Length: 108
Image 1 (spheres, helix red, strand yellow):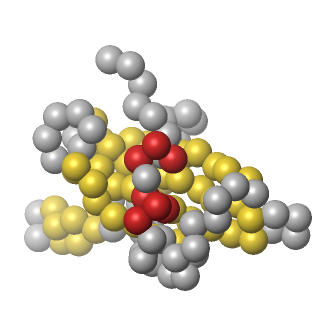
Image 2 (cartoon, helix red, strand yellow; image 1 turned 45 degrees about the horizontal axis):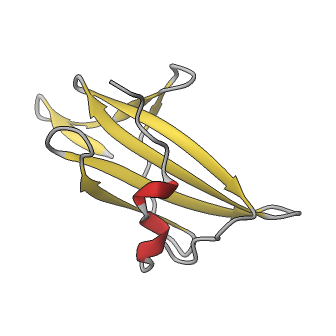
């Protein structure tokens, strides 16, 4: 994901809510990965939900990532589910983006 800053394209980064590490936001659409914007749970604007699936030697792993803009910083929250409800094609399956599957926001 990029934004225009002072006339240049700049990669947008997020801060991991658990580790505090900063990393670029990379959104991908494929057969087992997808993303979309959703109305913000708190306040105005939007959040980004990302679903990514991977087949391991022993099971199917689904990652649910939630990006929220807080005080002008994108915060990443991550939840992983092993062997549960493979999302199929997230780009075409509403159930893959059910808000209840994504990490919750901390209490205010």
